[in-house]
Image 1 (spheres, protein in one colour):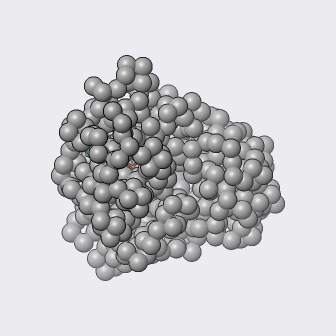
Image 2 (cartoon, rainbow, N blue to C red; image 1 turned 90 degrees about the vertical axis):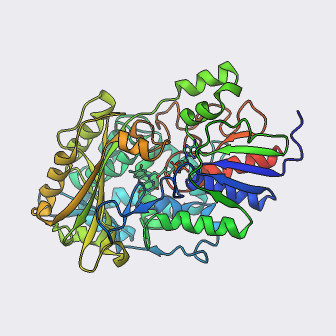
Length: 473
Ligand SMILES: Cc1cc2nc3c(=O)[nH]c(=O)nc-3n(C[C@H](O)[C@H](O)[C@H](O)COP(=O)(O)OP(=O)(O)OC[C@H]3O[C@@H](n4cnc5c(N)ncnc54)[C@H](O)[C@@H]3O)c2cc1C
């Protein structure tokens, strides 16, 4: 069946990638409808009163360097559609047991000063990448191909391909630089001796200087709302509360279907149409560590030992380099870390709209084995108490979410995995198969974080999937 003459696109799922695909397809001349299973839009960019009335929590994503660095989002008039970014004074704080915090400051010079003996080594590693960050992110937040900016890309690649553990040990002498580097690399959800785990630390550190680890005023829901508002201005629409069970009625000679779904989701809605060979490849796609998350309503700001921690929306709680390595090695081995590395966000310090006057919110998670049912609440709170004695006394209410709770909330969080599938070397570039966004079925595309460039709120998977659909029109 010839598929030239497509006029309509159905996007399944309204996560940031689904909305990015919908926008690009609408800009390309399609009439677009987005079908979302849940009653609210946004997928991993939703906010809600999870604990008590008036306390607005980010249910998934909270801090958004990649949204700000995204070559696609940067072209969209999202500010005109209600999105406002807040830049905390520092990108990241990483407290240590001596009562100080290692800081990823906006300024490279201030960060170097903070790193002491490793300041010069840090500058040598990061500064050339920050100087050319726009070109770097154009190549990085894209499917792998010949880079448009080969010099910067090669400079990045030589360090990025290494393990975070190896790079930190060979490049830095002191605990401070090694610890903060390992903490940032933990966003990979890989054990830190894995190839390419260093790339996550480099990307996020560069973004910390280039664009800042910013938060949206009002919560991450505002990202989805602004994308929705812009989509509507282009004539697109979103229908919520509509879980797609099969694409049979959606894929027609006039209509393409673009799925903001994981491989599991794609198999569910279209498995019966896919050739056996491709189906098998989707079935073999791996999902590694899950997340165990807690949201807190707090009576006051977190009482950090280091006051520097109150200058950043993101705080990494893991202590030393060795402790973080041990924590991140646990989930791939099926274990739960005794002292988990905790990624914490404290948005209400910078955004009064998140909590009733004088009150606060916080969000924190750690990595656990995929599908784990173990309750990490106590271990996570022990880590916070370690760097902020008295934290537990500030808790008015908490909501803990296991990997299973997360998957119930959003079918894309397979076993609690938040990155759309493992970022290991076999899946980092060719995800979920060599076909990337296309499938063997004409008119059927995949646009979720199970495609390149993977997890995070940047919309680039959606953008490239839409470009592919427009090219094949
Ligand atoms: C706890 C947590 C913390 C995170 N923190 C950050 C962060 O701070 N910064 C950051 O950049 N990223 C963060 N992320 C990752 C980020 O949220 C995801 O990478 C991003 O949302 C992926 O976008 P997506 O569009 O691919 O999929 P999703 O956002 O998961 O959206 C998929 C959508 O599809 C819908 N759907 C699924 N199946 C169907 C169906 N059959 N029919 C209709 N609709 C369906 C789902 O309901 C969902 O709305 C975090 C994620 C989690 C879970």
